[in-house]
Image (cartoon, rainbow, N blue to C red):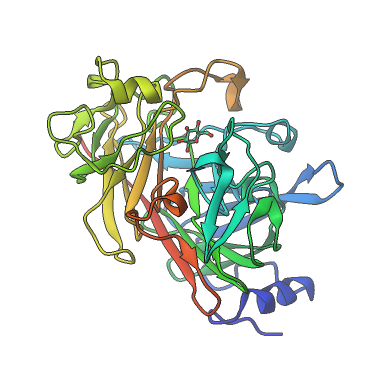
Length: 382
Ligand code: BGC
């Protein structure tokens, strides 16, 4: 069976099941794709670890358990490569539980108040896995399932495609959702994630990527300088659920329209920073959903590493690792403490199914959910 770009996910699943070429790297010799066994889930499902290397020698390791980015090697201004994401060496450590390190998050990224929403007059109850609320798809979100995987080289860099069918009723969501996530490590040092989903019944869909970045590869991220061209953010209550207000960033520690170190105001006496224990908020971008635009530019002064974040969605959560507390030890024995990393999670707004004035995350049969995120890496001199 020959798979084409326009195939349905079910066709793609059939291709993989039928033993279509899983890894091929004939066409673009300087790229490399490797795959090795990463272990087994408790249910005995085999899990692999894929290594994609682009023509510049940058490298990403991704497992088909949770679509998790396990490591990401990018050069600094001296050309030295460092791993710039948090994570673990072994599958068992991921299985023991972690705060979504590197994960593919869905069916609905971020929080849904009281773990319920109403769609077309029907109320759906989701798994409550964050106090009374629902977060990141529930107990068995997309970060904790085994995806079918298919890797190949392409003209712009090595590609890993992941497929998963989320069944009707899973974690309380209506409709069978067929999901495809395509990771590309481009030869321009971008980690690109293209999400694609269709449903057979009205549902909600909000997918994102949850890497914890530290562009220095060590220490805290308070000196990372952030620019976000957003005039507004969504304030939250004490459970980190949006109040529904779209608040101006003017005169607040949420104004990152000029490049500002993350740590410059993080401990300010500010009610919203107290609610989040730091930054754990959604920024609002004045744009059309579907346009790929710049949501953030982050620079790390010591290494010179720069990360730009682009997405086709209208919101982005900046989370500054406020709940990391030294209880997890990751790769190279690094003990992950508060603010050792930050996440930039482009998506629809949190709790949008319960907020009529927020952009809608409803997906209906016949429609296609699409989301592109680009994490673009470069260096600049001090
Ligand atoms: C949320 C945080 C949460 C973290 C890990 C982030 O997306 O905004 O509140 O602690 O994920 O679950």
